[in-house]
Image (tube, rainbow, N blue to C red; front, side):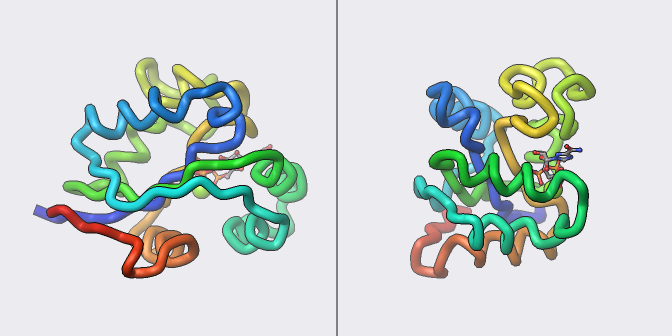
Length: 142
Ligand code: RTP
Ligand code: MG
């Protein structure tokens, strides 16, 4: 058993369309436990720091503009192999490529407005969880 933590964001397009509960239900159905959560509205500096790996790419400015366009829900999901299992649950980045029944296939509007974020590796997960949450804001249940 490898119990992992991963960082999830419900992005502004999904918060705006009142989909927080519908997306949280997907986490619970997949036995991913929400062990930390908060609503925040990122400023440009916070979003740029979060997506630093994409700095210099052509879509970076638009991505930062989108992620600062409204509030998001940020949460830590805990469970068996949660990093890869949550990536599978989200589906591919572009909803047109995402498998049926995935969060992005069912809810995303476009490549940019794709409703959710998930950490892509153990290293990213560790960095991203710490980027938003102090240790005493996380409540492991496993
Ligand atoms: P995320 O980091 O948000 O979980 O998404 P991801 O790993 O599936 O995709 P990534 O390559 O990390 O891209 C981060 C986010 O940038 C937006 N994007 N726009 N060509 C484009 O216009 C483009 N490519 C990516 C998406 O919102 C993507 O989720
Ligand atoms: Mg990514």
